[in-house]
Image 1 (tube, rainbow, N blue to C red):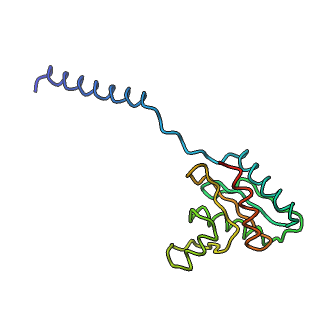
Image 2 (image 1 turned 45 degrees about the vertical axis):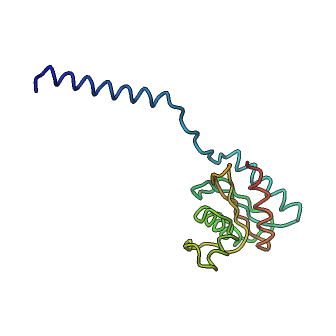
Image 3 (image 1 turned 60 degrees about the vertical axis):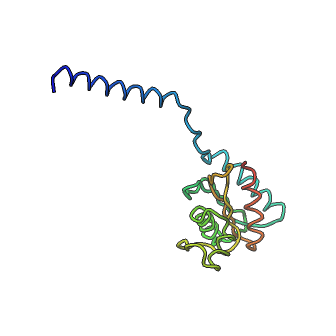
Amino acid sequence: MTQRMTGRIVLTLMGVVFSTAAAMAQAPAAPAPQALTYEMAVQVIDAAEAEARKNKWNVTIVVTDAAGMPVVLRRLTGASPRSYDIAMRKAATVVAAKMTTAEYGAQVKAKTVTEVPNGITFAGGVPIMSGTELIGAVGTSGVTAAQDEIISRAGATVIK
């Protein structure tokens, strides 16, 4: 191969690379999934706390991001110290299973889902969704499982 042919091949390849890069730069990027911000988490926990206070339920509420990391936590006066661990485990179960803890519990019982280590199989953990994207979770503990779920749903539903 001559030096002249090698030069043409290199120039052609460089043209392809630059053309591809230019086309990629002009293509509209897919919108990034909405991450749970601190401000959104505060809206969620405020709504959940309002529901708990309306019913005079002393609970612990935790809001996590999609990775299961706590963003905000509130332990209302009179909530059991143990409720913290259960609320955290409910939120972690939601993130791992991508469903409410009540749904997860039913699927564990039916043996249709892989068990989450230390997963909670009763109500009170609810996903926070942005459209069809899971962006976080709410876990509540301190009253009955059904009441915990009412509180968590009140919080999660403020995000659309």
